Image 1: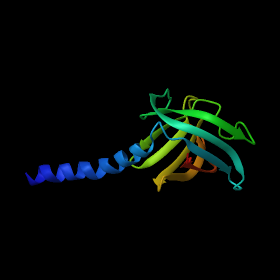
Image 2: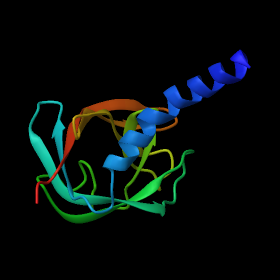
Image 3: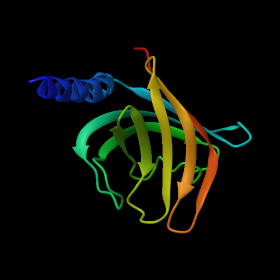
Image 4: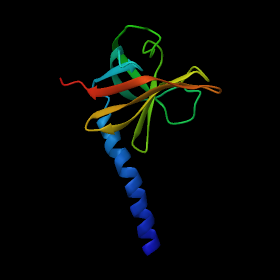
Length: 142
């Protein structure tokens, strides 16, 4: 019986943070994305919504579609929000990425904190891995 209770407790400890974070990413909320290069210069700004639609991906995981509402960029290819992008949440970490272009992935990876996520922006593939900059997202107050 004690073993069963411990397994249940462990499952709750692992699941609850993800459930709480998943609730924040409602399809009703509009989010603002900002990407910066390694020199901390703003490169891309976009408004988007998370969806529950399954996304196409060349990389494993439970990827879902991001619906971009509007975007502006000083360099269209820096983080190409005009292409298909998707997201996944895994153990409290949010990853937003261009995942349909195999072995040429662009990922924004960060941890959720106080209705915000910030972190690093990387490019990677079979033979490369490069830090391109940073990003942040936050809920747009309506």
